[in-house]
Length: 113
Image 1: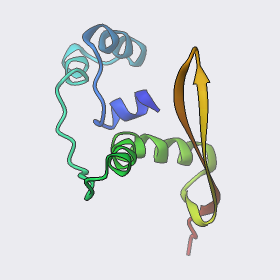
Image 2 (image 1 turned 180 degrees about the vertical axis):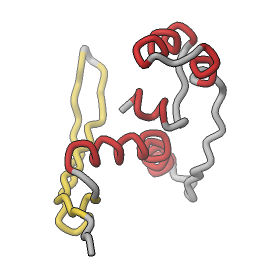
Image 3 (image 1 turned 120 degrees about the vertical axis):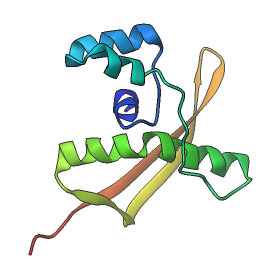
């Protein structure tokens, strides 16, 4: 998801990582430099609630990459928000609490006419 977000212009890389990615994808130096540029994210959430703001921020940064991954794995379509389950859990790793959010929605392919 992280590299997908970078390639969609929603995340940036440190210069060393940009060089490695550029080499892996056979990109020129100018393109690699763009991957390190400061971002102006325009998908602005309409809330002041810190938790909801972070959820919107995750979607703003990783949403395009998530959609690309969904289309790669399933084909052209969407995730249902009706046939859908969501779980919020807690996981502690080395004494540090982490939030675990699992979304599970039925895949709905777009119809062709």
